[in-house]
Amino acid sequence: MVDVGTPVSQPPDDVDLAMMAKALAHPARLRILRVLDSRQACVTGDVVVELGLAQSTVSEHLRILREAGLIQGEIEGPRTRYCVNTSGLAALKAGIAAL
Figure 1: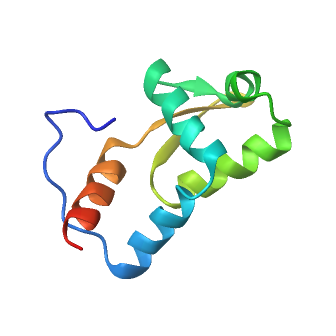
Figure 2: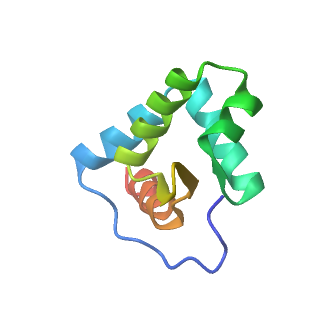
């Protein structure tokens, strides 16, 4: 998911690394990351259709991923467009490599 050209990031502190790991500890959130990576970006409704889960469930998973810094959202009118946060994933990779 991380672009080859993404600069190496500093490892996050233990609290942030644990938050990122916890965010990845659910199959639906892993699927969301894969969907966002394959589409570059999409709105919540697109993720709902792709996963086949309730909108409220998808919104909660998106919130957790966003708070962990693994995705980012941009408000476009009444919708939020989500994409993978490549710097967040680079930080996660650096944190795991430093273990």
